[in-house]
Length: 186
Image (cartoon, rainbow, N blue to C red; front, side):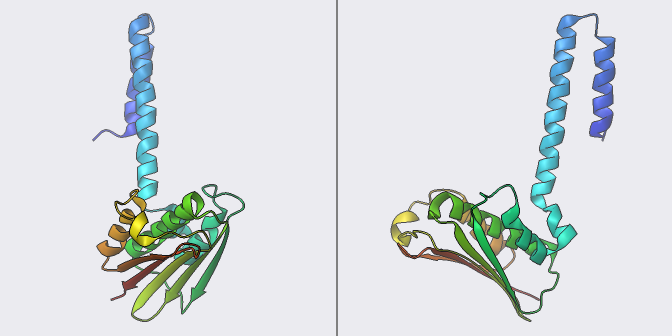
């Protein structure tokens, strides 16, 4: 396989050779733009698979820093509570928990009509438990989930189940919503 940087150099060389032919120069410029877009897309995809802050900070610190990220409005107040003895988990489990919190907070911002949420992460000898609760408007579980409005809830459930965990969502109108996750540890 030829690396992306080698391809970029080859396209730049081709552009230099094609400078006298305007149509070929335009085509090469389009190839350079496409190459740049592909490189950026691959980089984003790799970052999305395993967020760098998990490796750099660990799950607890990554969750604590998540509300300050540019992805959430400044007025979103998120309390992060940790219980039990924090420890590093299997990287896949850490990624699942981090992504579930991200999606749950995105749902708070989009649907809950509140600026307050709580993330609770509990470590026990046999499991890790996660709860993301908001103080928003809530919804009727029967009405709002048939059919599912989007991929967020389905994606959270599938991620959790892929690591042998249990996913539950509860809500009642006027009482906010809670995402609960329990993942057994071997």
